[in-house]
Amino acid sequence: MIDSICKNFAKKLKEIRDKKGMSKGQLSSLAGCDMSYIGKIERGEKYPTLKTIAKLAVALEVPAKDLFDFE
Image 1: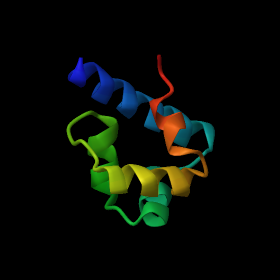
Image 2: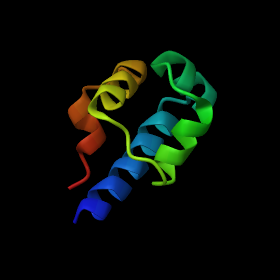
Image 3: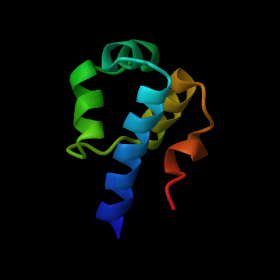
Image 4: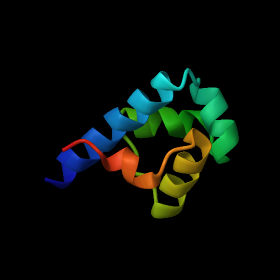
């Protein structure tokens, strides 16, 4: 179940980023994360902390809960 949530979060993050027409580089700059880290999150290789999730949401200009809207 946890792996499923993490994989769905990764897909949702990429989906929202793509929908906004934002590159990984742009998102990483706005969120204060390394671009390779964004890629690893989107591939499900790394799991972001709550603080990082909040930064990603602010950078994407969406409520953090939207990153978990996959059910």
